[in-house]
Length: 594
Image (cartoon, rainbow, N blue to C red; front, side, top):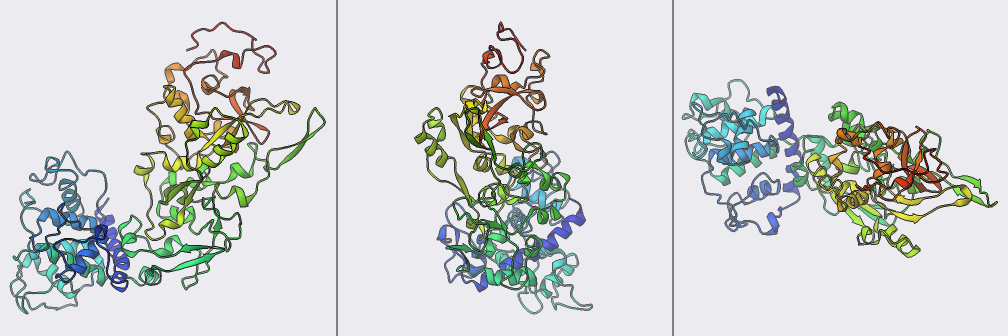
């Protein structure tokens, strides 16, 4: 990040954090951590409110013994950490691990604290040392505090008018401009009308007061007015028979990564004045809510699309998302060849009429298949399973009872409304550390034999999209047991543009077995997909591209299936049997294919 980018970011950071911190005084007292507070900061203690507010904002924390120690002198490394967190300069990456800015603060001193915070403060131009030393354990002086706070606030502070004088006679020249600016903006006072006491030591409680003083100075009109209304904890909206909470917790919002963003930059399609007349788009993974595209009757809606996100997230991979497999609902609306997905009546060889394929129905399909919404993955939410249980325990049971039970066990919902208060988002680190979000969509089961001889259809039925279950089954067989995260293979989720349906996905831009197993590629079976041989349960066919693939039956339609249910053993009789439709020999002597 360049110096100019850091300066701009600090300007906006303080403005937005303050916008959301100011209403804290309007909303009354703020609960301390675990609703306990600190043992040495009673309600009548000097700086109590400011310490509690900064704690709620996650800018400060106490000691393991439950104290805050407000009268202790704050050290330079403690101050660096506080300012870096408040200015949102802290990231999970360790800055300059091999080239520390100061010889007395190296990674050996501790990670991330104090090294990374001091390094980030130095990189952002918030702190300086002397002769290559930072003196991390030295108490911070009042002059140093003025310098650091004014640097962090950037252009958010007003410039004193020409000729403005504080009246202090003891401020050294190097700190005069900063002290003047801090005093003019009401952040710091003197000990007397003429004495600032620049070399006096700052306490932890005093610093809390100064930071909150800065925040309460800088509220902008836009977000501040939003939170004034939405700061009401009882604020909600009646939607049909349900209540949708509209309360936004100012402190929690100010602490998240979108605190730099004005409300209107995301919520673009609404009137600034209540009741806002927000544009609602049906579908929000509130799967157990009412099936009704009328968003005044069902909370299955969202009001921010990817179009708003890519205005800030301008990288090419994010801009590709609205056209990607995860950013569209095309696989529900269309067949693999682009024709509309509709139910087709077919007369079987037995003279009976069968309904094949399915009609696209927004009331049902769009509860899960959402169009152009980054929040499906990134909006932090609770994931609820309709009926508790592990579908793998019933995997091999294919009777009607098991089918119904597995159906409920693989019906999941995301309740987005629980996150309105904090507006938290899930980033790549969390999304790539588990399959929690992926499995909310990629969950399902095998239904057993769903053959329809009258339509010349034979094979296994599959309900929904059981890739996560398939992956676990593979791991149990010793296949991909060290690659049990979806993102171990699927690294380009924002950019995956496939043709429609499962067959389209298979011939799209997804990862190939050869990406990891290049040494196993064989010319002998060049028209046979690896998963055709290594799938554990499904039959195979030759798809529209002429490649042999596993397939499944869905809605009495045969679809190529990108199987994750793999085994090391190979059953040659999948292809090689009498009168097989692939046109290969009816029998084969096993040999080392690879």
